[in-house]
Image 1 (cartoon, rainbow, N blue to C red):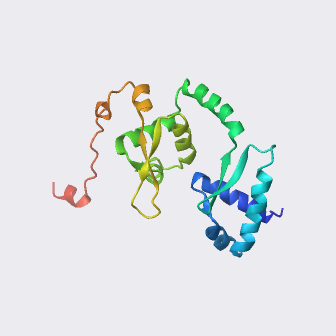
Image 2 (cartoon, one colour):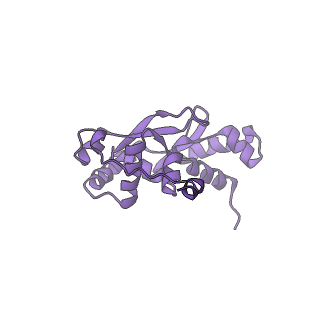
Image 3 (cartoon, rainbow, N blue to C red):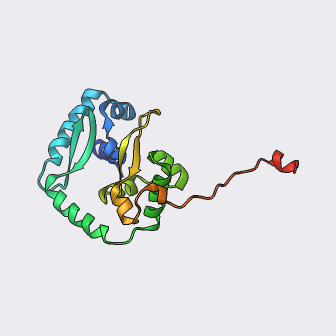
Length: 181
């Protein structure tokens, strides 16, 4: 099965999500000239403008990403409204707890704690207005920082984060310390 260059570019852009990917990154990854890649991207932008597509390809500050079309937003909002009334999944609760206790926190830090990817969960929690972006970290790549919202406090009937239960203090004792006791 041969995959076309457009399909490869489409897959790469999809994987990079809301962060998008630069023309230079695509050019380097595909080992093709920027002008050649730009022409393909221009074609793709036109193709995704078709009315039979629910999303489009855009370029913001020379970063390419997919966004849903305006006509889709009302339907997405309906789903979000229906989802808000349902219970949160275990993974949603775990992600929310990590953010609540460690905020502001990056996606990578959350994934390190949970041991699984959480990009889609963060998008869902943002769509439910339970978390929001709190700026960008000063670390390499300037990743997005997340924090909880007033909606989170309302949902869990909290006046402030100070009402969260204290976490047990787990400390790993070194083997050297244990030998001398």
